[in-house]
Image (spheres, rainbow, N blue to C red):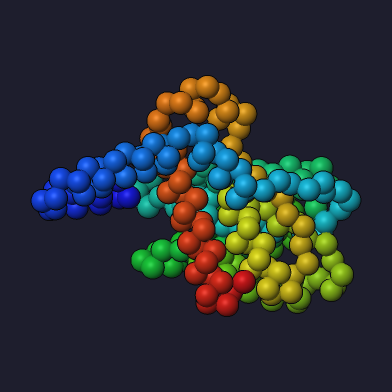
Length: 236
């Protein structure tokens, strides 16, 4: 969009100098935002790094958004964010967390009955996790409600000094962490599903424009905008 707008405007301006300036501006914008190195650096800063986690946690809080129910085939489909659940399962099996806390209902207006956490609870039961070790909060529709509803659940079920581990996608952790801290939940963070790798720092990624860089910026700006909107609304 940032590239198209200057080019489109240039066709409606008769002044040749301004036409040239707008088209050069569009070319510069394209070169900047299609550069994988710059996109990776920006995303690397936003994702942050994991700190060392140690000891045993009362629960791993797993944010929803990693799957959906398929009405046509009557199956629950996991997506690219399912690392959240896989890491929680691993920690549980290693006895590093005592409970898995699933938070997330349905983010779709037309499918309020299809609660993500309920489907995942049944899935985990089939993996031989004790039902009493799975806690479900299935009313939230976004990150803010995840924090509010989960905080209420934790206050009802656990001592005030309990340790909890928040697990979500690295690019989403900044907003999620701030929401939970706003609700007074003391958490440590486990970022998963990092998008930046050493492969992003090669000569080709620095010199050759890439459409994947545009997609990275799109995702990053979406998260940044979401963070800012949450700030304005007082959620953080």
